[in-house]
Image (cartoon, rainbow, N blue to C red; front, side, top):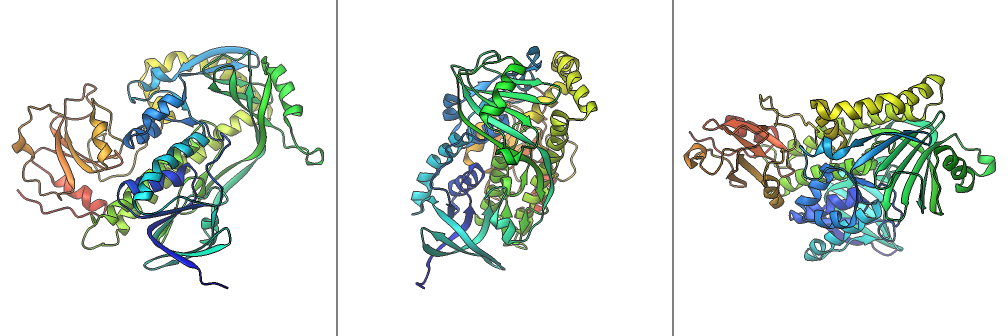
Amino acid sequence: MSTPASRTADVLVVGAGPTGLMAALVLARNGVEVEIIDPKPGPTRESRALGVQARSMELYAQLGLVDRVLADSYTAPAIQLGWRARTTRRIEFGTLQQPISDYPGLHVFEQSRNEQLLADALAGPLADQGRELRWGERVVDLVPASDGVHALTDGDGQLTHIEARWCIGADGSGSLVRRLLDIPYEGVTDPGRFWVADARGVTGLPDGVINLRFGSDDLLLGFPLGPGGHQRLLGVVADPDTDSGGPTAQTVLPQVAERYGFDYDEIDWFAHYRVHHRSAARFRKGRVFLAGDAAHVHSPVGGQGMNTGLQDAHDLALAIADVVAGRTSPDDPEGDTRLDRYQAERQPVARRLVSVTDRAFGVVSGRRRGRKLLRRQIATWIAPLAATVAPRLPTGERLGGYLGQVRIHYPMPAADDQAVGRRLPPSGANHALLRDFSWQLHRYAGNSAPVEDVAGLGLPDWVTGPYALPADPAGRLDPARLYLVRPDGFVAAAAQVGDPAALQEALRFHGLASGTLMR
């Protein structure tokens, strides 16, 4: 047998779906050497996941990609509820999300387009490193070591030994990386199944919005993919009769169309699949991390899956970038404290999401009499009432924040400021400052704030600012405080001007060099 070729990198990313591509792009943009491999011949061609939520749009804005998403996506501003063929009430995303995000609504931008967007953006940074995205290359073996990871890969019969400081397993729900590390994938598989179809010439469903219709025994979800009645349709099917080959477009769609009062001209694609609700027991094992579907998987209810993977990747890549850039504490040069923040922050998010979507799927797909009655009550009066009342209450903004994934809260050192541990509220052009991926100091007291108020903080020179920003019109950011903002846009600390101790503590909490405190 010939001697394998060899390559080295700071990070090996296994899997070039949206999660792996996001991780590789953020790493490369921050000067981290990255190898990314995937056994597929190229980006996914099927649409699969559909929606880009508000928080993911903010990540694309930070990467300079949001204009392309806006130009090529189909924004669904509302969800139209109904019972069988009868519509009831619309819930406007814009009303719920406009106060909290610059990108309200669900942006229908299929997984295939996300992958192509990210792959295109990654090509340049990889070329600058003398690398390329290696399609058609798969992991054969993976051996963690105390100082790195050794992987054996196979690309069209060519074996390669890759040595990296860290590895990110973003290789889907059947993750070989997870299995090689013997990490349990805990949860359940629902006995029901989803069917999914891409249909053209759909009539009878309100156009340009998400349609959610309930029936006694099933439901119908419709997502707008483009003009001319191009829709993604989803529903629940009973456990298929494997002797008859399982459900097909011909056996499912005519009855569904009649029951819910719509027609269609043709079907481009039809599939059915089981719904899993699972989360990895751990997201980190030594120098190997899991992200996206390799770390958690759940039903597509709510359109959260791909978005959660994109945010996993963004969080993890920036933690690794801090370590590679040498920002860690002298007592922790390998950055374990900083890297441990990834599991501490993202695993609770995943577990809550798995739990919520598991319960939601049980409501919308359960066939017991109580669940059938509940679905009718939701469609005919609970949801319409909520749609009327919620926009007028603070809970409406919260609901919009949860759907758009902008209300995620990470554990941070104790603080009496509600912004700490959350993504920085958009105020004026403050999010534009995040495009350089630096740790930053912000103050929201206008340009008249005296410079001497923030002099002598003794923070490391890689903390940029302080930036004098206009007062937050919504009052969420205290003009008498300095805000330490992480590269991912989350607020790490708030400190009274002239008392920087909380800023120092936040850096130590993240395992970073906190500088020399000067008074």
